[in-house]
Each structure stands twice: as C-alpha cells, then as structure tokens.
Length: 387
Image (cartoon, rainbow, N blue to C red):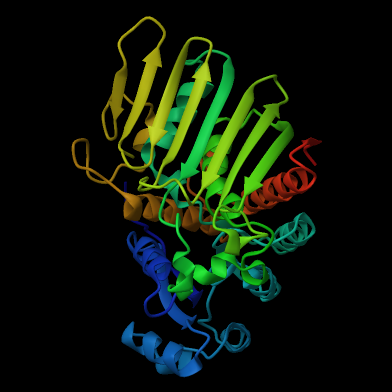
C-alpha cells in the first residue's frame, strides 16, 4: 500500500453530521491515504447545526453550507471548488442529491441504495457516463482483502465449477421494536424514507454485491423471495426475507436478509461451493478465509500472507498477523474510488482497467435485485424472471 502521490481530490459531504456513525466512517476512510481532502459540506438538515459541525471539522465557515443545492451552486463558481461529494443521508434523498451532483459535474460516492427504482438508477448511470463521472456506492465490506482472495481463487479454478452460493446478513439488533425509542432507526422502517424494502435493501444487498465481486461470471436468471414483518408495526416493510436464486449456468443461491436473528451480532457470511472445494468468509472474522477441499483438512487462509494471490495483497496496510477491520476496508474502498476518479483526470495508475470497486452498475444491480425480490414476495413468493 502506497499513499497517493497526486493532489488530493477536493471533496465534500452531504449529511453525515454530528452524531452520525456512518459519517465518521466516511471521513476516516476518505482521508486516510491522502486521496481526498474535505473542503466543504452540508452536514445537517438543521442549517445552524450543520454549519457549526463543519467549523468544528476545521472547514472555512463560508464552505459549511445550509443545504446541498446551495453548496453545489457556490462551489461551481470557485476555481478551487469541490470535485467529488459523498452522500450520507436517508435513502429517499439519494436520487435527487446524486442527480444534482452529476449535473454539476461532480463525482459521487453514495450510500446504498443508490435510489429506489431501476428507472432512476439507469438515469443516474446515463448522467455519469455522459459526463465522464464516477458514481461509487459504499458496499464497504468489499474493501476487505480476503474478498479479493476469494475472487482470485474462483477465477483460477481452485474451487472447480461453482454450484452453490450461500449468502446471509442476519443480525439480531432489531428483534424488538427498537425504532420506537431510536430516531436513527425509525426512518429505516418507514416506506416514505426507506423505500420499498427494509432488510432486503439495508443488509441483503451487501452479501449480494460480495457475490458479484467473487463471481462476476454468474448472472441471475430468476429468483423467488418471501418476506415477513415479525415486528408487526414495520409492515409493509420486512424485517426478515429469504431469497432463492438460479444463475444462468445452473448454479443456485440463497440470501437470508434479517434484522431479527436474535443473539446474532452481525451474521454476514458468504459461502461459495464448487465441484472441488468451498470457501467461506464471515465479516466478524474478516481477516480469515476458510478453504475447504473435499477429503482434506480445512485450511484457514490469513490476511497479509505471502501465500495469497497478489490481488489480495495489493491493499495490505500493516502486514500479516495484525488484524484489520471495517475502517481499513472502507479506506481501501475510498482509495479505489480515488483511483477511478483520478483516471478521469488523466492520472490513471497502471492496471486501472482491472480496478474493482462498486460503481454505478453495482448500485443499479442492487436496486434491480430489491425490485425483483419485492415483486416476487408481493405476488405470493413466486419465481420471477430476473429483469
């Protein structure tokens, strides 16, 4: 891992203000490798509170704005205006803010979901391509090194023919109606703010994207989904869902998305089963990857070791034996966003064409998957052709 040699990208945030856990993660990740420089922000729906927070972060008070529209317009007039913006606001605002940012010629890094409908996602994709701008989506777990190891193992045939994909993100922190006392959770179960789903979009799309990174050659052919609101007040949004999928090569998959898996801390696991061997990754033990060859003892591969494929060592920060976690994974992701943005500025590093990061297509596919799951579930849990 080497630090950026070029000028940092002038960067701003919308949302992620005081008390926002995700906002803190964005800033820590973006600033870690000198790839981005925070120069402006519209951090809060409360203008005064947002301005005060920006000042506390060390921003010029004139660049701590009341809202995103004012910020985009004012920064566009500056010779040193922002070049990229991160969006860390409730789901229902993502499309409008992302569209406005692209129309102002900005690169965008957006919390998922990118938007609520495939039509909206396709509009954002068209805008990004027309303007030559990057749209990144913060599927932050993709920044863990062992995901790249898994991808390389599949590509190199270590597992044989892929047969079964077993995915889950099933935690237990919302097994009761915690939103009644927690405003930061309440909007997630309100269709007006969260959109057409709760756990399918909130947690299910994370392992879905990891599977897309590891298995880029597999395409979903059809799926069947059932969803439940075990905490009845959350209806019509689900707090538990099970999705079965068939791929175009005959492989099958399932995704368990849940916030009511009582006792589970996080519960995000990815298991890929091939004709020769299987691999399994669990985000509570992100530095390890289980490699299970039929008829042989289980092997636990460790992050940062020389026996890994080179792709898994590119993002290594501190060498084997030292545990890395979510902040490092997000920093790896932001570094990739920065490299991709740098490519549009004429400073693309060697090998940029192989750079893997969750871009606008990943955001679109996440929205497409949720849309298909909801369509299946609302029709009684029937098989639907993936479209």
